[in-house]
View (cartoon, helix red, strand yellow):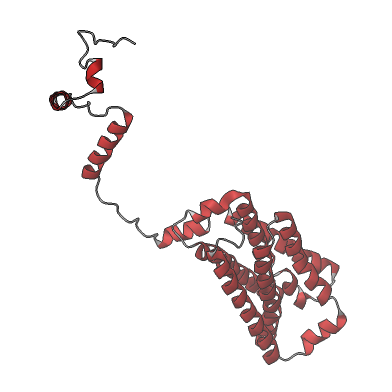
Length: 275
């Protein structure tokens, strides 16, 4: 084969690639050294990096958000239609009292043990409905602990229920003696505390709103069935106030245990909020 000779414009003739001398290597190194450097990168990435470096010099250091004031906490607690739920609970509460007064299914002294917890049950069920409709993520974005927010709402409606039951008691028995009023207050406080503890436990474990609402409706119905028994009615009249107060204290302990358990569950993202 004939050797191919390099053209005049070639920098390195073909025969030099087969046998490079020291002189040709030095000449190649000088040419490489004289090559121009590549231009700096341009475009989106370089522009973004430049803006980021500039922002690091201009932006002030991050500032922690200011803590909520008491007014802001109260507004947050009563958000998501709490007053509408309270109004609905009061309507059902009054309807239950009228129904039991007209039908005479139980003595008037046992009306509040049946209907006294209805406003709290309505608020609890609607809170669960809001959570199941996707409000859990919004609630977690608040600057309040989730368990504090939920239990503060339940505490608010609990205090409102306490005031409503007290007013109703004085309306039904305007001239009642102190011992009688204390007995009646203990009688309705026991089912109310037990209903609240049971409702919290049910809401922590039932994710379907329809099933939860049905279970909460059964709580007053169960007390209605129980208190229509003549032997139970006689027991409520014959038991002394000390034992009745002990039962109320035991019911309060059960409610406190339910709040503690559900509070720890709240910290894990559960309790009315299916993550």
